Image (cartoon, rainbow, N blue to C red):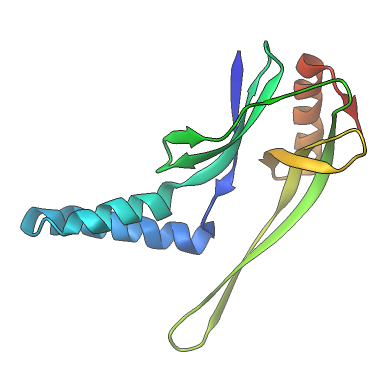
Length: 152
């Protein structure tokens, strides 16, 4: 059985909003001018592309995936072995955008990530993202019961 986990949009909240706006603007423009397809394609790419991970529990494999246009997962499968470990890491990302009047817009994305590490506790990849530490611990336990890896 495979489970899919979301890590967030690739271009951040500002890029995602701009992409969706371009996509929605391109739809009626395409009716009058075929060049509007450029807005639709570019907007859907920027607005809907996201990153995540896919875990195949039967085969003990994990795939860091980038969902192009929000639909097509791209990435390579990686086998999980005995020395790998799972842990929790606090994540604090900040996205900054500037308006034409030089105003700064900061959007903070604070949460927790369940991460996959190698035998030397070096981070390989994030597996999933949640909002609080209790939820991160629950998800870590759910995944660990099925994969039987060590915990950090």
